[in-house]
Length: 429
Image (cartoon, rainbow, N blue to C red):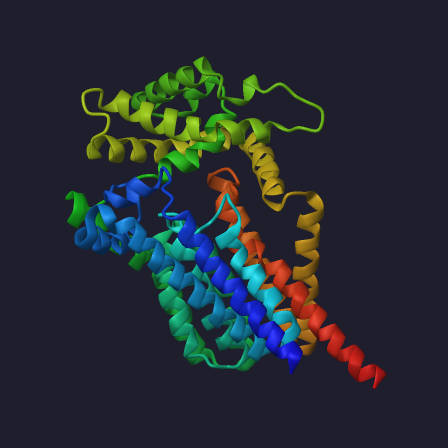
């Protein structure tokens, strides 16, 4: 009884201290904030729509209200997800505060503090927890109607951050296996069909939003900058020859010369013991992608109006057309950089091997014994790999892109410890 009361007070203390800490810090803005706030072509529609209501009603005082709402959404989502884990896996009460801590970390650590930041992470993180709740509930307990909830949340998530496309291949593969295993081809097939339709629906909503706001039926115009940065970083001046049109060749020559002048490319990396060229790429990514490819690119195409919507769209389309030829011409160099980007995301080769071991082991035990924890291991590590692969293909592996999955291994360890202690108790008794 005393232990139960103590655990309750610990949990209350964790959440109360979190609320006080977030309110003490107050709103935190990032460079992305004002892109969302002003409904620019650089932002998908999800978060700008979320901010728009606050902006209209509260104006300059909106940021404080946004933090309150984001904090409430995060706290409620974490509490509910922990309760779901406790009920689904019969987690012992002693481990519940540990799960609370693992999921609350994103609200505490200084370089995240997601509830305080007026950025997409503040809403994406709790939405991601709800997505997992619906999907896990559907698979483990054959509640296939829960997949509808998962699809709706995935749709909203991708409208918040296109990064969440990483969810789709994992869900597709697991749904295909579940349909084969349960023979529920018709029911699960319907959700698979909707899952394949999602990219089309997302693209339509994205373009419609920008048409309403900017009078341009165009997708969010930031893709070209992101996908060209890796091959551009390893490119050489002579690579202009791979492009077919004079416009592309001229654009590349001028951008490349501008980057060389500022020593942003891999040619200027000087090897240091224990270091790789990835760190040079990491340090110069923002200046290269947004300073050179975006700002300078727009200025070259529209010298009289480099900040105009037309300049943004034209530069984005041109960079997208230039990506494949430059990637193929520098394929092995890009692959090497991508590999080191992934290692940086995992923090070490050993962490990558551990994640791979958990995935393979989980797959084996899930297929063999239908273990719920093993299924969670497959799902979590599948999402981890897909997130890292997608992120590392287009940007540098910042922590803000990785924290969505970094709590998963810790949760699996807690669930395995709880399972092991229960089975040890049964064995000794």
